[in-house]
Image (cartoon, rainbow, N blue to C red; front, side, top):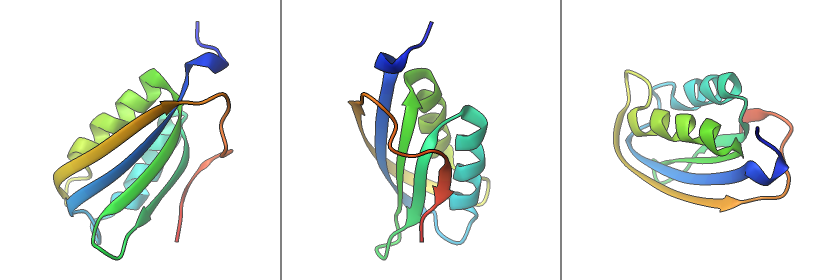
Length: 97
């Protein structure tokens, strides 16, 4: 079963038509559904940045969602990095402004 040693942090930059298409709100909803914490925010360059923490299997689900995005989005690229972490820094998942 999972324990604290299974925690990872995912940091992603999503590019394409990803702003103004409910990408942040949908990412927040999916992350909360998967039990992942962290944040999502729009960047001035038109990309969306995501920082998420949770178990590997939960982050895998979120990463799959980021590859697709909500229906109105057109994801062109997702640049993802992952690290193992000892504990979560965030208590929930939120839209960062």
